[in-house]
Length: 74
Image: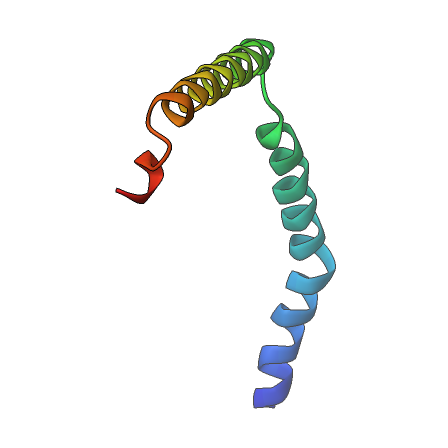
């Protein structure tokens, strides 16, 4: 009797509630993970700024290498 007392609600939950719950969970998740247009533009802008910074750092390191060859070891 006690096994039947748990089996019926558990079966109803697995058959009706769980599929809807999983469907709603994963359908909301896919829309939430995408970047908006403004976020994509900001990411592209930050990527471009990082590239410029890399170029500037590389140029500064070349200048330091020419003027002070052992600056990296200090």
